[in-house]
Length: 67
Image (spheres, rainbow, N blue to C red):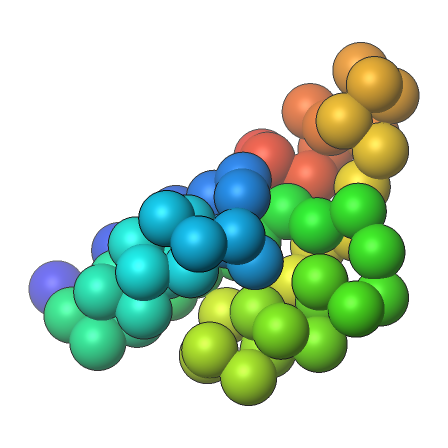
C-alpha cells in the first residue's frame, strides 16, 4: 500500500508544526501550504513539501490542495 498523502495548512505554526511532524513520522507524505519563503524553509526542515499559495486565490488554492 502506498503511503498516504495529505495537504496541510498551518504547518509552520505551533500546533500545525507538531501535527506535521507526527504525520511525517508516521510515513505520511505532507504537502504544507505556506504563504512565505520563511514558512517554506521551516516546513522543509520538518520533512514536508512546501506549496506556496495565496489562500485568497481560489483557483491557486484549489490547485495547491489537489496537486
